Length: 529
Image (cartoon, rainbow, N blue to C red; front, side, top):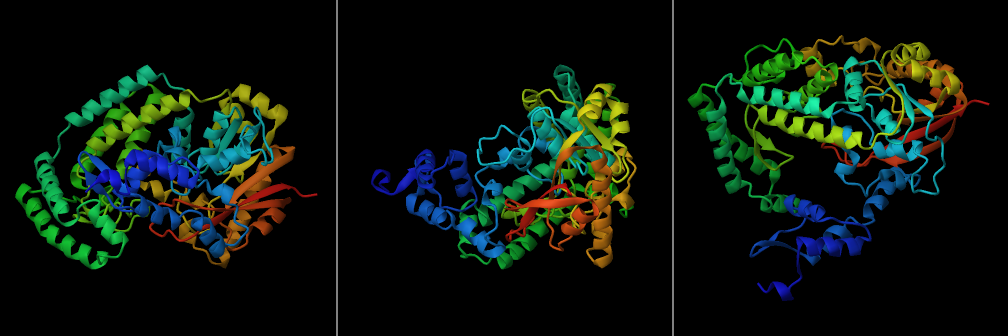
């Protein structure tokens, strides 16, 4: 093939071409992603990878501008596409400490920044808050609002009913002695690497070798993904056949090495969702964490361990966000388009997350501005914010008492969608935190019926009524919600507030396999006149 006279481009050239074509920056990694996941065909040429201009143009023509048109057609022309942040890469929306620990249902930091940062480049945007203001998040979750507030020099208060959520938030904001922390991290890493329970290494090495051989033969990448994208392979039928075929190999290796997959009837979350060797390593690692004397270091090591064990649950990659049934065998992975396996050890994941966490904490430490914060493990319907802040930070309390809270930016729980304690059940089991599921507002287990909706309206209204006692007179409240039952007009009424504006935004890049167009509303509330 004569590369110089063809329509083929190197990855670098394709990056430049796509940037010109789309009138925005398209990196080489963006092009590599398209090749890796079979969006465009890979052409080999010597030591380089090439892609065809026509292939790229077909991909971008089917995408460029069409996504916005398609979504507005499905969801309405009132969709605010500026709030889609579709130009951002995943590493932008999960920057620094925002990815210290997974949390289902959180909003991206850029959404918070858009409404609370008065230094953004968008000159058309109204300014609601300024540096030095106090922002409140009464459903603070993993702390996105508080992190963004500190990054731009605002004070912040977060309230959450979950003790574990509060620990995640606090570890993002704490000031660390990085030398001391890195020493503790390396000590724990070495201890875990040196620990051996069921001598599982030989089994995993052979399993990985057999899987690699099998996947290279039957699921070559990116050719297989490319054919699936274009309907040249019946993925359902083919994957089921090959999954059964490899399962025979897997079972023979289990028998050969005498591997015990599960050691209990699943009385607790840890018993049910972790293979025997993984459970032993988790218990060992936690014993090492408990020995740490510095409380800040102990907390962040606990979060690293929690992030690790979440990734090591015996489930498929596609079901990691929403668990279905324990996966104790090899399986066809819809995410990676090949045969994958459950995890038999936490060692590599702990090592990876430990390194990543230290890097993210260092990055955020260089971005922090002056600002107080308080994280309150409390019920936002009844919390005495002044009293709780005073107990934690006298200096912050004086600022709070003098200027009060400028406003709220929060995402209340969606009615009947998530059990917020249950999503971190592994951490509650391991750390022994008190669970307060009964105090959640709108939990999944209560459903979405009339009674659940009435209870939800009552709960959110009580939160706003309690919080407004601590708000400045001309407050601004922003509530991010998927209000498919039209509950927020009643919530605003019961809270003595008025909805003065609504921003309807498309929600892109969801983790679930259901990628159908989906939107949410940011309600802007002020005091009722």
